[in-house]
Amino acid sequence: MANFAEVDRLDPLDPGTRRIGGTSFARLLGSWRPADQRGLASALTERVRLLILDGRLPLGTRIPAERELAGALDVSRTTVAAAYEALRTDRFLESRRGSGSWTRVPGPTGGTTPETPFSPLTGGGLTDLAHAALPAPTDAIRRAAAAAVTELDGQIGGHGYTLAGIPVMREAVARRFTERGVPTNPDQVLVTSGAQHAIALVLTLLAGPGDRVLVEHPTYPNALDAIRGRGARPVPVPLGPDGREPAWDLDLLTATVRDTRPALCYLVPDFHNPTGAVMPPEVRAGVVELARRTRTPLVVDETLTELPLDVPAPEPVARHAPDSPLLITIGSASKVFWGGLRIGWIRTSASLVRRLAALRPSIDLGGAVLDQIVTARLLGEVEAVVAERQETLRAARADLCRRLAADFPQWRPNEPTGGLSLWVDLGEPVSSLLTGAARRHDVLLAAGPRFGVDGAFERYIRLPYTLRPEPAAAALERLTAAWQGLRHQPDGGAADQIAVA
Image (cartoon, rainbow, N blue to C red; front, side):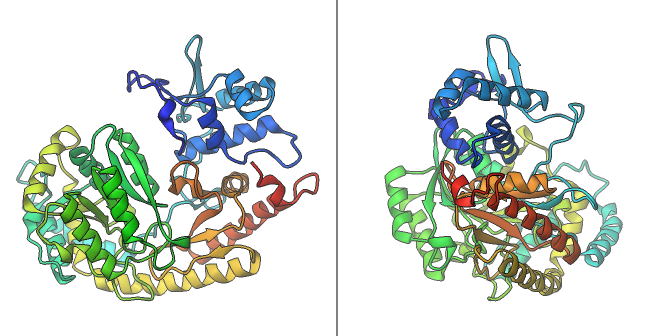
């Protein structure tokens, strides 16, 4: 993501009051030029469009004037003007005389609907390789939903607003933590509308504009968006090479906390998104001790913890400080069950749960009661669901790795022991170029820089192994065509030419 140090923040509700300067914009664009230097305006248009759809260029950001950007990119003003005009036509830019141009996304009435990483799968259209998520476990969902309807009678006599969650859901989450070795009472659990809502609540309580938030690098992109949306600044701490063990450097984490004094640390220790790494036990103990010693809240994202494939389920970080208000664990039903449930949770001290619940009236008035009943039922059979998921995911992971080895021998995927995706080294910094090319072949990808700060990870893409075999095979055929298009430019140039900034 670009460094918005050059930004003038005026009225945050007024579009265009966040500015990005020409130098920062040029850095954010990265390697966007075609190898033969023809079609510069089209290439620039496509790269800006990708940055907007990926979230790397926030909506409502006022972009540089034509002359300023032309100078920063060393291209003609005519090239920039043509690109801006194409973006305005497609409704990715809005302009006002005397106020400049700012980013936007087309609405439903603005012509074509933009293809975002959360676009639906369609049989003959776009195939989503940007979103690592599974379809619902049909039988388990149907059983839980049928039982939930009968249990609803016990809820409909009340008003339905539950800031901390209905008792049956809080009890189910507490029971699952206790089964995993972390004794938990229901009053230590807050039910949320998904993990992203949980992250936003914690940030609202603990971080404010200008505060620093320590994150792994790379990390979950929606967490980065939430941090920036709060006005805070992510402080990246690099993981080891490709996320391979040992990925976390406890000395580096300690030094960064000491030097930057973050408002909180956000970590994904279990089948890390996107690298798949698992934090070793001694580092888990070490980061909890670091939080205790420095009084720095530690937010642990356990969204993928229930999806081990080749190793035992990781030990919860919360085992090292089960009652501490400094340790905040976030979980979700989305990855192991189904994203359509939109149920997550926070586990921490009872006192902090009460403080978090007190924030909700300004955001929402509690979660959907029926969804909570369904999820509570599902948590009662989570081990059976996980066993079925594991069989499917192991086969899909093996199939994806086999196809990559055959069709993309120069790519280097990692070897995750759990989770839902591969973190793939492309061998050269062409992730954004490949993402744009793939979209032209009806495949959505999440470019590597989406997972980083300041345009990092152009050598990487994340590839999920969550699609069923038929759409997965079709998607990889299209991805092969997109990659070959990058390797063989119209002038015969090779991909190493287009990799040069």
